[in-house]
Image 1 (cartoon, rainbow, N blue to C red):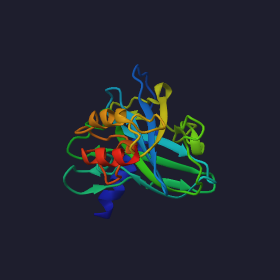
Image 2 (image 1 turned 120 degrees about the horizontal axis):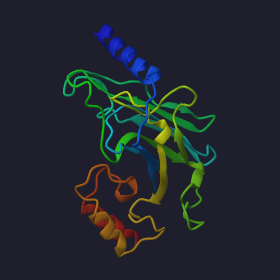
Image 3 (image 1 turned 90 degrees about the vertical axis):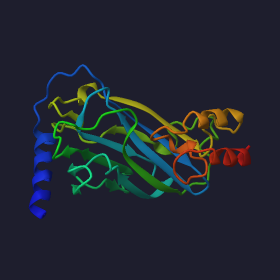
Length: 237
């Protein structure tokens, strides 16, 4: 079993680190949605693959260590894995958490033994998540615009000769990768307007039944989005 694990990790390292860059007309987009309540600040890091099937990805989230602490980061191992879907799988690297620098690096990959060229594709594919303790009590909406609050920034996971986003066709995509928005809102502020109104009901309803909604739409914080979140929003209005 250990030999097989080492095989997948070794093969992935070869594919991710030593792939020969090729031209790509596509542009993957990586972005972050975050939510806060009285004690916690949670972020989900996503990628839109622009139709490409990815074998690897890498992003780094930075934050203000004086505002956020105790990061608990996880990769989306249900999507990014080596092995056989529905069978034995192996994770590739835990998130790298540097509490001194205030960074969390996610390096992910997928290699399905039964479908090596399948890769990962789609919109709003979760790369990883992180939950912080809010060390500061100040309101992220106090300035009227929570974007970038708490020192949040997102960048490619590795630089230099390392290629982060690589397709199953061996195409290096970093040169066309686009950093999308960083949106932060209080739980229940589904339209991230720094307030609560009936408009948040509409925004919440639009996410019911859809995959990977932003964490701030999950007003009650129990996972997923449902009509139960309406009650939570009403209590905040």
